[in-house]
Image (tube, helix red, strand yellow):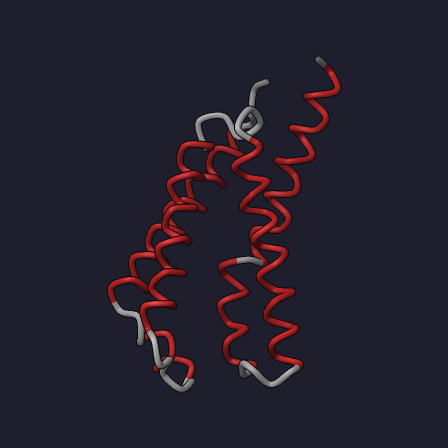
Length: 131
């Protein structure tokens, strides 16, 4: 099950992005709220926990980059998070729990990765049927 070069590149870029974003949120937990004009959270350590999780995804993406088709389960877990995150945002936005400005996180954390992750997972699905 060989992966195409672009798949490896996508996963390396996703890894670096997640590691940087995770580190930013852990080290500077209030900066996102200042940038978006949102009220600071009462317990920033919860937001830092989110940063830690995103950073750990970065490690998984890096490891999967060596052969994304073979390591598709790591990408599948990330893809699910990139689907459920926006769903959670919409639900919370509708109820007024979060302002629209929080949606900025969806652009770079979730939405831009939908197509490449889907294409990698689809390739893995095709390869499994060839075996």
